[in-house]
Amino acid sequence: MKKTARKKYIALCLLAAGLLGRFWYSKQALQKVKETVSFAQSFGQQLILDAGHGGEDGGAVSITGVPESSINLSVVLKLDQLLGFCGVSPILLRDSDISLHDPQADTLRKKKVSDLHNRVAAIESVTDSVVISIHQNTFSNPAYHGAQVFFRQGAESQALALMVQNTIHESLDLSNNRTPAKIPDSVYLMKHITRPAILVECGFLSNPEEEAKLRESSYQTQLALCVVSAWLNSGEIWTGEMGSGML
Image (cartoon, rainbow, N blue to C red; front, side, top):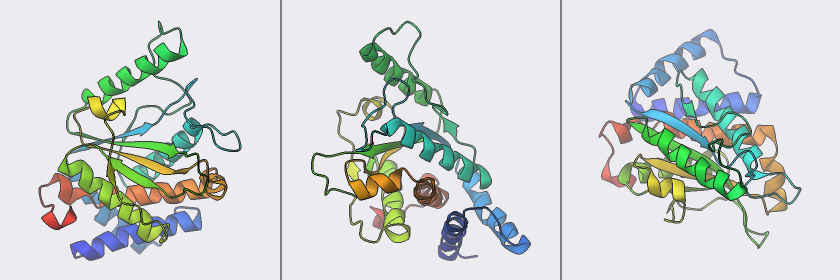
């Protein structure tokens, strides 16, 4: 199967699974999926999934009172399930509603600082790792909407961000014409790690229509499918086959 056809096939299979709401394929189709996704295990990169915030630190709060941290976790758990189906085993920095702070941290501020330090340490302890951090956006103007991907400095991070952003545009929201942007230095986690990394702002909790979708399990699955499809197709980034046209 040619590379372009293989990419399209994986994306279609994943999106079909999400639309059906279950993982069912014919025997022949399942075998093809297994064959085509097997290359995703040979990147030589360990994927780390970061569900932003957690515990007492709920992050942004939606217009209906839902903390960002819970939506972040839901998306990450769906990513983990979908990747597992494709034979990829990511590391989750958190898989429940907890903060990763040290026990001695006794104030919210100290817990936040400790949590970030521990996330950095956990990421840096894994060689050849790539980070995908999941967050939700908010803004004073409720008209703003649309997922946007941010990248840590480096060509690999930028290329992965572009793949995820393009997949969201093509497979989930054709009206979303946002482009990937560099993560500001004010984002502590991304400033202090040395691994390729992207941060996905899944949408705006301050936009009524988008906030309603972000709370839906089916929409979270569609977002996760877009990220998974991009990751499975990112082998050329890590194997040195990335063309200059990607950037």
